[in-house]
Image 1 (cartoon, rainbow, N blue to C red):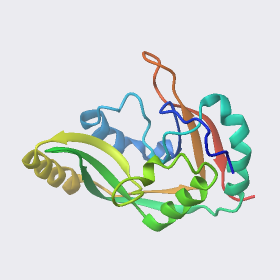
Image 2: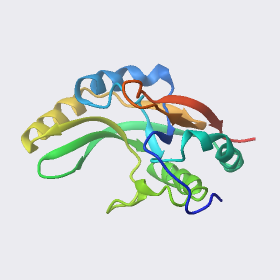
Image 3: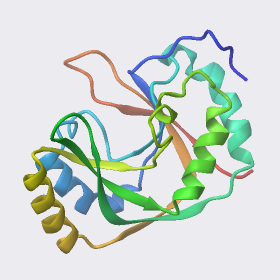
Length: 185
């Protein structure tokens, strides 16, 4: 287990990345509505913020050891939901199912870096999600959710690994994969 007083940064994360062959319908929505479209690939955040890039090599071994004991599982993105922030500011997201599998995975990984618990600090705890956009105004949200959900075709993919990702400072602040951590032996 990594030391409690270690540093963490918003320039790194541990995520699930869907395979590129299912990105198209997700990216069509994100390109139009997600202000983070350029910076982030489609992903489900597991740990963010995370350790500085310089520590990746050291903590990778611990993640690899935990991931050896995890079996791959299928995820389906069926429903579009939202988080409300302040006033009438919302984030729309795809709800991955099975929810519990991703929560269990996050808990196991969280145990390696217990201080990197920001995604668990929300009122409802950790909520697995794939962000697709932001919107202001309750009426605009309702209309957009209805429109997007009516045309959304569920997307399935297998989760057999997690990814360490990192970014530099602007203008080169696009997240990129450092390494994949595969499940199983």
